Structures are given as structure tokens and as C-alpha cells.
Image (cartoon, rainbow, N blue to C red; front, side, top):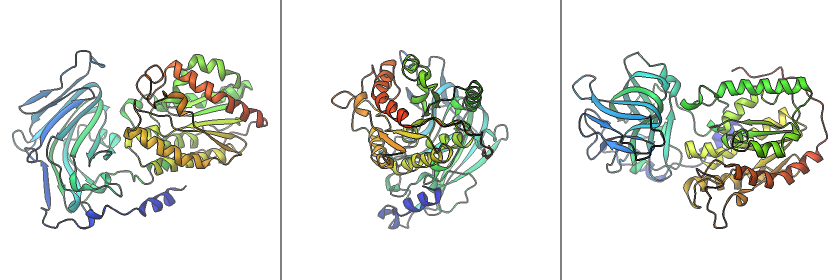
Length: 455
């Protein structure tokens, strides 16, 4: 599916009816934090384990008795831009996650602001070389919408106060009801850094100056992975994989099998290494799993040479759980991204059969929102199998208990696999994989592609 056709398909879903009948007696400007928070709301600061409210001049996120990141520090304070205490400063160090947000107030009606509205705020980036910025809004259960602004925010470091203006539609998907927004503003980050925020407003008619991706096409638009924790290793790993392919070509031991995916696939090099050696070393298998990858990140890697010059008999593809976990993405757009990857593999590896795996279950218990999204993805992508070049395999039941729950022995964090989990995966995969390898005749290595996309 192309980006154009995906956008057209999703555009057919109308906005919530209430959005077209919103009252008109709303102010042209809604101040979320202008010297003080919107009436009934508070300023919160948190890491991924604990939170605190900024009720005085400073608030430090307290540590639990046994913190997972003992060295992390997250705090917020009142600061000044144009007047005393009219700004908020977030400072964090070695944090997996840090946030400064409005919290605790009654739901906010943003329906009247959607058509031409903007979310605007002043920002002073003091330190962000090892941090990032995500701007987020939540409109209820299962409705968390955010814009990754990592690289542009880093470019603001040391430039003093700047005004950012995001189209309110950056945070809206067709069907969302913005009549009761439960979190009208937050800035999220990780790593280490310091920034200040002031004059947070929603305007009914604003002029955006900040870019946001179109959620309708993001999953099919090739892009490197832009996350704070991945910037230092993601591109080097890509280069290492290109070098590994060259080494395999030079040695005459081209991979018969290639695994493509995210951190769950990358884990064959860690917790799953003994199982990999036992089952897949015989195929000179190539691991193209990258932690954190979404469908668009895998697409970028394929278009930048990771399968050029090889002709594996089988490509094992599993991707999509980060589209779910990071963006709570519509299963249709994730499925479209997976379809796009299949098309790319078919073009670049025409003699290779594709073993498409169902996205693994996540969350400890069945019925959780992220588990449900993955289940919907799997129902959609099962139809991509053609019985010849693409086969679909769902091993979810092998990884779960009889009641649908996940075991910490198999998935310690309810997402990634232990060695036992990788052994269950291998045992369920090998019969199908072996049969597909046996059915696929060996092909001579193709010449390296001369049409590699520009970075």
C-alpha cells in the first residue's frame, strides 16, 4: 500500500460527530499555563517510576525503595521568562523517562479549536545534547497522541527563548473525540538535559511553525529511528550489518535465512544466543533486528542496503509492536507498514520466500489495550499470506499460559523474551522454516544494488 492510498483509505473515516457540532461560545485562546496552570489543574513532574507535584518553588521526583535506575534525577522548578515565576524548568539526569505535565484537572473541551487551532508554548533549551523532546496530549483511554521533536529541539539549544506552534491536528486522529481531553499538555524526554517552558496556550486560529508527521502515512514513510536512547548505536549497528553482509559475501557463506524485526529479533544475539547457535547457525543466518524499530525504520534499513547482495532462501519478518507501544497506532496503519515491507522484500529479494510472523503478545494479561492492538494487527496481516511466496505463522499460544496470561519465565517484562522464550520460539518456528528452506532452490548472489537510496 502506498502512502497516498493509505491516507485516502483512512481519510474515509469521519471525525467524531460531536466535533462538527461544537459550541461556538469558546474563547479564541485557552491558557493552559500562563504564569499559573489552567483552573483546577496542577503541574506534575515524573519519571517512569514515581511522580510529584510542583506546589512550591521546586519538586524532586522521589525514589522508590529499590529504584531501577538509582543514578537518575528528575526535578522541576518555578523559573522566570518575562516576569517572576512565569516559567517552568524541567531538569533530568540519566533518566529512562522524564515528564513535565498538566495533571489532575477536569477534562478540557478542545473540539472548537480543532479546525485551525494550534498548541503553542515558549521554550528555552539549555541542555539537550543527550536528551530529547516529545510533546504529548491525551484525550482519554487509548488516546495518547504525541509529536517526536527530538532533532529540531536539539537545534534550539543555546538560542534562548523560542516560540513553538503545533497544529492541534498533529495530536488528533480521525474518530478522536476532543470534547474531554484528559491531559492537554506534557513534554516528555529521557537521557540528560534541561529546558524551560512558558506561556502554554491553545489558540483557535494559529499559524504552526513546527513539523509533525502525518499519522496516516508515518508507518510507510522510510525513516531512521529517532529516539534519544537509540541515536548513538542505531546508525552504527546499520553500518555493522552492511559490513557483515560484505564479509559473508567475501567468505562465500551467504545467509540462507535472514531475520528482520525489532528488539525481540535483536535479542537472538543476547538472551537467545545459545538457541540461535543451536538452530540457525547452520543457515549462516543474518540477524537484522534493531531495538525500538517501527515499520518505517525497517523500511529505511532495507532501502539502505541491508539485504543488497544476498539471496536468502527465507526472510523471517516480525515487526509492529513498537508501532503499538510507542504510538498506540491504528492497526490498519501498522498493517499497511508491514504490507509495504513485504513489497520491498519481494522487489529486492525476488527468489526469497517470506515467513511473516504474527506480532507477539504483550502485557501480562489478555484484554489489555496494547495486546488488543497487536491482536488486531495479526488479524489483518494474516491475509497477506499468498500460499506460495508469503506464509503467515502465529505462535502466540506457544508463548502464553493456557489462560492467555504471560509468564515472567518466558517474557520477564511482558514484552521481551528470556532464553526460555527464545527456545519456545525456535521450537515453534523450526518445522515451518525448515520446510520453506527445503522448498526454495539455491540462488546465486545478486550484484550489489546500485540504486541505494540517499540517506
